[in-house]
Amino acid sequence: MENNNDFEKRPAPVFSKRLKAGKRRTYFFDVRTTKANDYYLTITESKKRFDEDGYDRHKIFIYKEDFNKFIEDLQESVNHIKTDLMPEYDFDTFSRNDDGSYKKPNDGVDGEKAKNANDAADEKATNWD
Image 1 (cartoon, rainbow, N blue to C red):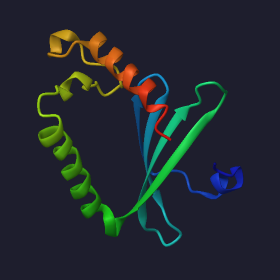
Image 2 (cartoon, one colour; image 1 turned 60 degrees about the vertical axis):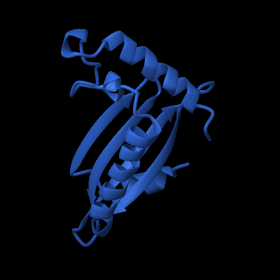
Image 3 (cartoon, helix red, strand yellow; image 1 turned 30 degrees about the vertical axis):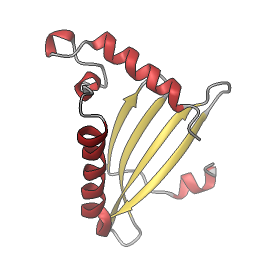
Image 4 (cartoon, rainbow, N blue to C red; image 1 turned 180 degrees about the vertical axis):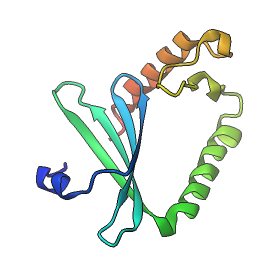
């Protein structure tokens, strides 16, 4: 768990994106600066606690020297799931608009189906810790 003093010492992000994923999960992608005026990326998963108030947060830091390899290995891992493990699965069901809402059915994706499937995945993910 994060200490409030550590949070206050960290510089504000110079760029930030938020990805809402289901009812209780949100991912944050924050670009921050180091004391030496370098840049790094933090990826934070914030998950609302099921039976309590507050959030659990998990954070990963990625530094510039690791960007290319990280992206390469992430893409390879996702492609392995999509092509080797689940080739028949329609991953476009989970497509979202820029505001985080699900694409409308006339966009080729059933928005309500995507919302329900993602909420079910969110419920299932609560037991993975």
